[in-house]
Image 1 (tube, helix red, strand yellow):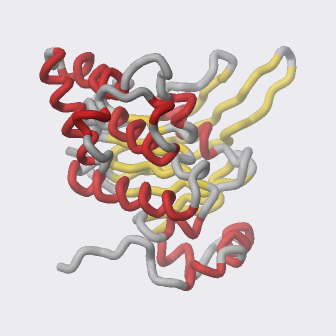
Image 2 (spheres, one colour; image 1 turned 90 degrees about the vertical axis):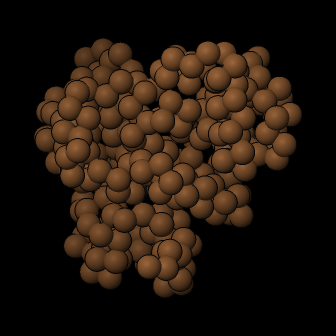
Image 3 (cartoon, helix red, strand yellow; image 1 turned 180 degrees about the vertical axis):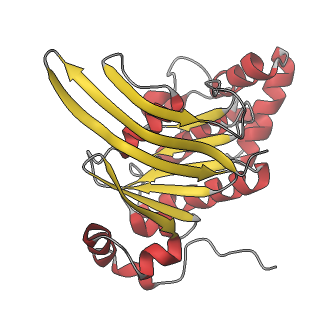
Length: 264
C-alpha cells in the first residue's frame, strides 16, 4: 500500500448560481498519509467542509471541480460508502427517523460487504458495542429520537464504519455537542481509527480540540490552504499570522493533550 492515501493537486471548487460564482476551494495542494489523523481547521466559510464533500463525492450539482484528486493507496477512485465513511455534524438529520438504529447500521454492511440480513444485524450489534452504546441488543430496535444527541452521533459513527472503510471523514462531528460529550466522541474516534488502521480526516473550527489527538494540522482560510504540518510544529512555530491568532484564542492549548499517546 502506498504511504500516500490521497493527493490533492491544484484542487479548486467553484459554486455557480446563475451567472454568479463563489470559489470555495482555491488551488489546494495537500497530501494525506495512509493511516494518519489529519485535522482540517478553519472558520466558517474557509472551505474545510467543501474539501470533505469533494473527497466524498458529495458536492451539490452546481459545483465545478478542477485539479486532481489522486488515490495511490486505493489504486482506484473511492467507492462511496465502501472506501470511506462520512460522519456529519448533525446526526438528527443524517439518520433516518423512520428506520431503526439496527437497520441503518446494517444497511451499509449488507450493501458493501455482501452480508446476509442476519450477519449484518450481528455486525450492527457489534458496532454498537464498539461505539459504547448501552445494551446494544436493545438499541438495535430503537429509533433515533429515543437516543440522546451524543448517542445519535455514536450511532452515526457506527454506520459510517459498518463497511470497514479505509478513510473516515468527520465533518464538524462534535460541534453540536457539549464539551464533555465532545471529549468522549474524540476519544472514541481516536480509538476506532487506531484499532482499524483507518485514515482520519477531522474537520473542525476548534484547533484546541483537534490538537489533542491528531498527527497533523492543515489550516484553511478564505478557500485557501494557509499552512500544514505536524501538530507540535504548527502550534509552536506557526508560519501564518492567522494560525498564530487561532492558537492565541485558545489558551488551553498549553495544557496536556486530550488523548495521551500509548506507552511504548
